[in-house]
Amino acid sequence: KNWPEIKGNITFRNVSFSYISEEPILKDFNLEVKAGETIALVGETGSGKSTIVNLACRFYEPTKGEILIDGVNYRERSQLWLQSNLGYVLQSPHLFSGTIKENIQYGRLDANEMDIIRAAKLVNAHDFIMKLEKGYDSEVGEGGGLLSSGEKQLISFARAVLANPKIFVLDEATSSIDTETEQMIQKAISRILKGRTSFIIAHRLSTIRSADRILVIRKGRIEEAGNHLQL
Ligand code: ATP
Ligand code: MG
Image (tube, rainbow, N blue to C red; front, top):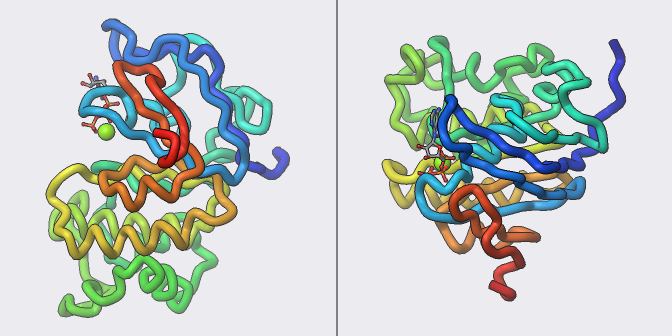
């Protein structure tokens, strides 16, 4: 089926969500994000930031309420429609056993080696990859186990850049990323945000500062919102 092209407007309308049959993590959550807007989510651990972006990515669906993409409940579209327009770097990035090259290429079977290297350079992953004995042909191991958590995020970042998505999600790992890697990620972020709807969960003020809107999340609710000058 030929679905319309995604523009990237995302609306949470009265969304409630619980993982199991527990107390809901989100209750009547409302948010309207315009195409091209960068939203930063901040808030203490367990406040629901990752849950919000996981719902936006449709890794989970609302228990109540709905999530609209360009005005249409995403349940009325195929998973593939959203997934093919979505790039994400998750808190625990998912790599499959295979080479670095394969992990960056992922679904983009039309991408050639030059495209892959260009994406890796853009997120500053190229240098660490070239230091590995087999470079882009190095095996990442089961679940990416042969790489550090920061390196996994960079590979996953390169994959997102290569996919050239309309919607971009970055859920930065909390710890275990060294300052150098974090600075590389930071530089890459500013390049990738342009022209995309983005959700950024980051720990550096400098990253958050560039967002159009910062949402302070507390217990699954938006406690405050504004840009960095307002907050
Ligand atoms: P952090 O800053 O530590 O990443 P967060 O703001 O991203 O925190 P979430 O991961 O969204 O918080 O978690 C919100 C709540 O949902 C927490 O109470 C957490 O324990 C719970 N939770 C998160 N993931 C799951 C899951 N897969 N199954 C059950 N409960 C979960
Ligand atoms: Mg989280």
